[in-house]
Image (cartoon, rainbow, N blue to C red; front, side, top):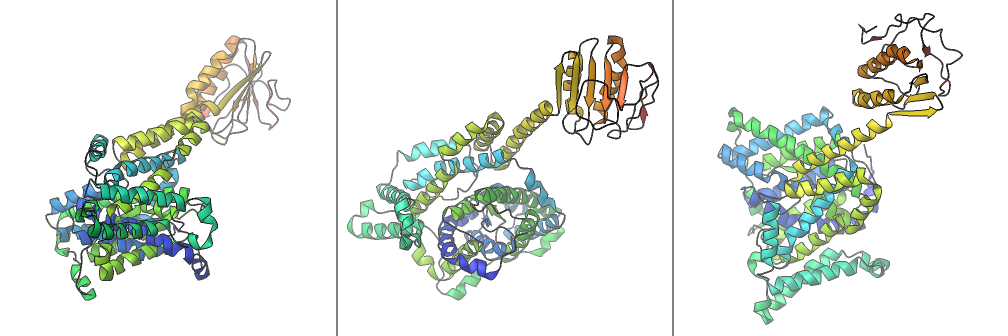
Length: 561
C-alpha cells in the first residue's frame, strides 16, 4: 500500500492542479457523452465524474488513475434501464454493484490484476490510442455532434467507425478544422525542449492554451466571419442552472422498492464484474504509464470503486470505473499525485454550479485535439518498433490484442490477448523445463524446473533419442515438484531400459512425487540420492543396483511396479 503525507502532495501542487484542469476539460464532454449513450440523464454522467474525482481519488491507492463513467458499461446500462423500466430502479442496482465490489476487495479478488501480461496491457493501450484517433478525427473537423467516445466502441463496429471517419472528410467544417489544426500545433510546440526549458511556460498547461484559443477564435469568428464560426452543436453542452442552489434540484435518488425485484440483483452482479475487470485493467495500464513506476494496491482499488459506485448510485449517478483515457491524459499533462484527479472532480463540481454558461463556449474540436495527442502517445510507432525487437513471444500477443480490441471490444480483445500470451508461456515452459545433453554414450536428462503433464510428450521424445548400450542420468536436483504423469513416464522408462542395455541413474527424484525404490543386485537402474553435479556416470554414493522386476515406484499412493 502506498502511504503519502501532506507534504508530499503540497510539493507537487504546481504539477497536479494544471494536470487536473486538463483532465477536467477531457472528462467534461466524456461524462456527458457516456450518459447520453447509456440512455441516462446527462447530469448522471457528471455526478459519476464528480464522485470519481472527489471520493474515489482519495479512497484509491493509485496516485495517477482517474475514475469516472466508462464507455465500456454503456450497453449494459442502456439495457438495464430499459429492462428495469426505471432509472431510479437502476440506481438501486448501481448501489448493490458497489457493495459487491467492496466485498470483492475484502476477499482480495484484486490479485487477478497481476495476471495480465505486459504485452497485452501495452497492446490494450495502443489499441485505445488508435481508437481515440479514429473517433476524434470527425470531432476535429466538425462533423459529428456526439462526443461519447472513450476507450471502447459504443454500439459500433470498426467498419462503422472507419466509415464515419471517411465520411467526415466529405463534410468538413472550416472553423472546427482551423481550431483543431492550430490546437495540435500548440500542443506540439508545448512539447518542445525550448518550452520545457522556460520555467514560466512549464507552469501553463498546453491544453489550457488550446481551450483559450478555441473560445477566442469562435467569439471573433461569430462577429467578423460567421461562415467560419463553429455551430452550437459542436460546442460543450452543460446543464445550466440560474442559481447555485438550483444545482441540488438536478439530483435523482434511487427507488429502493426495486429491491424486491430479482432482476435488480442480476444487473448489479453483471455491473460489478465488468466494472471490476475494467478497473483492474485500467489500473495496470496506469501503473505502466507512471514515470515513477509506482504500483497501486488492487484490492484497495476495488474497495474504492465499491464506495464510489455506492455513493454515485445514491446521488443519481451512473456506474464508474477507473478509466484509461482520462488516466493517460492525467499522466501526459504531468500529474504526479492523486490531487490531480481530485482537482478534476472539484472543477466538475464548480463548473456545473457556477461556470456552465462560460464552459458551453468551448469548441469540441479543441478537446478532440487534446485526445488526438493522447491517442498518438499511446500508439506511437516507437512502441511497435520496441515490441518488434523484443521477439515473437512479445510482439504476437501485443499485435493480436490490438487487432482483437479493434474488431470486438475491450474485454473480449483482452481475453484473446491473454489466451495468446498464455500459449507462449506454455510453449516456453515446454521447451525449457526439460533438456537432454549427450557426451559419447553418456546422456544427462535435466529437469530444469517444476515439470507437469504438459512436458510429458517432450520427455518421451527425449527417451526415444537415447541409444542402446548407453548410460543415462536423470537429474531432478533443480526442481521442487514433479507431476504424477512425469514420474510415471520416468518409472516406465526405468523399467524398460534393461531391454536396450541402458543404465539409468535417477538423482533426487524421491520425495517430489512420492517415488520409492527397493534395492537389489541385478538391474541396470541406479537411484542416486546425492546432490552432486550432473554427470552421466553412476554416482559412487548411489545405492546398490536394483534387481530386475523388484524396483517399485509408488506415485500418488498408486503402485505401478
